[in-house]
Image (cartoon, rainbow, N blue to C red):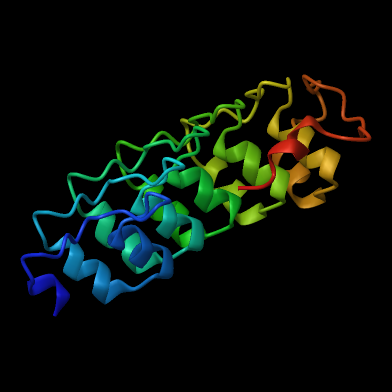
Amino acid sequence: MLLRRDDVNPDKPDNNGGTPLLLAANKGHEGVSKMLLGRDDVNPDSPDNKGRTPLHRAAIIGHEAVVKMLLGRNDVNPDKPDDKGRTPLRWATYNRHEGVVKMLLGQDDVNPDKPDNDGQTPLHWAAYKGHEEVVKILLGRDDVNPNKSNNFGETPLRLAADEGHNGVVALLQPPESATPSLPLRRRAISPLTRFIRP
């Protein structure tokens, strides 16, 4: 096996900064990830050129088994932002991986209300994408502010209303006696559309 050779570096990155562990995590190869994590010369929290770690990659795709392995390590930061300030939780909420969202929220050192470089919290992204179940999970937390505005002055409710996600709007809208902080008018183009692509 290659890992038994002294002249093989098991943590050597490719031109994009991706290590063998990161690539295995991205593909959900549980067995390979376990072998690599068992080595002292493999950094389980090494980022690629976009600042994404193996945990980021596993969370993006939704590989729960690999996420669980990585979260079991004390040398993996579960709340580490990538170059755009996006944490593993942000990626899991964006892609509607409910199981991964729950696992990450179970970590004491994960901030469920952490904004990215554009002021977008996980709730902003879940609301924008119309992921009702993820919104429910986040709203069940006392440490998530549903009225927080992003860098464009938009709340999660504003984004959900603008995209026509009725179910999310129903979850986020205030009581009838309250007044929304922002008018729910449909814009021609939201500034957020510039940041949809990963």
